[in-house]
Image (tube, rainbow, N blue to C red):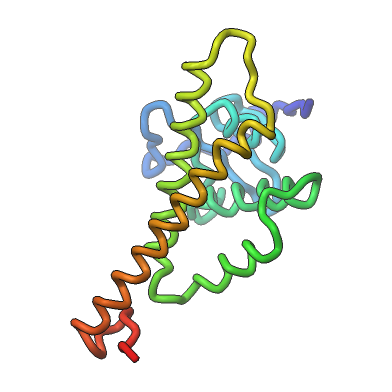
Length: 183
């Protein structure tokens, strides 16, 4: 477990009125030396501590200590990178390549929203199964694979239908950006 070191009071950055945090939102500051400082506990923390905050469902933002730029996404991506290289990866190489292909594509925004909705649906299903299962019953990875296999196929079918509708929309709006011309 990472231990946080208290920062001397003379070394604590002054509070900036422009940085008034939202109620319940924990503010972390990232310094040029790559260290993270938790303004709530007045101590330095590690990426492992930030990961623990995510797992606990804590609301937080990471700001650059000098520019006040929001670095939250960057820190979360660092945690994902550590997880992906530290054990059994969540994303296969083809999935990562496909995600990269969506950047700069007309469907980038739609794909991000779709992935977000799929993650929420998966989380909701997981919670519903946990609430409906008998006490002491745990879903094994094989059980989850079976349950999610049907869900994945259903999602694939819906995506194929959506793609077909987009192709048909291209015929209605020839030359409109984002719609492929009908061949």
